[in-house]
Length: 222
Image (cartoon, rainbow, N blue to C red):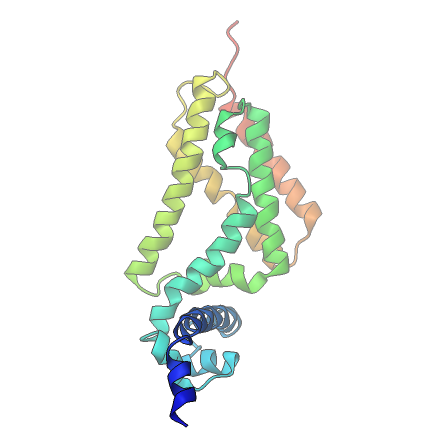
């Protein structure tokens, strides 16, 4: 009776560590589904445990509170968004490509389309990130703002290169333009969540490009 128990404690330890990590990932995925379905405020640790099919106490063996699991859930959601939206736009090789105003416009329109695709395929995720998570606490607000700052800084560098290459006007404040372009991606997402379709997004993008392009393009000397 004792020999099987001994064998189980020894070689079984690596499996236990793998199972621990697997269970943790299951809880994070479950919390993601619960938060995007019920909303963070209404969700409970018991809801998350039930989604996995484990007891209430199992949750607390991995996370101290509902707030403790929120950070990895945000990572889980943002990873999907960044992978789909950013794609190859901000890959290291992209910095080596020739930048034109037309390529910048195409990249922005592509980013808008990718965001709207997520809003169509997983509207709960977009609603959670845009509405539900803001204001939960200062730490999360700072984290989301920090992510926006990283994306804006990346755009800023691309725009600055375009200025250096004579593609965009020399007096352009590229930092402000970067934040402006990010802000301009939100309205079509909101309209997609309201049920508006691809044609409306297309007209929106055309309007933005028509308004911005003359102000961004470098003027050829007379």
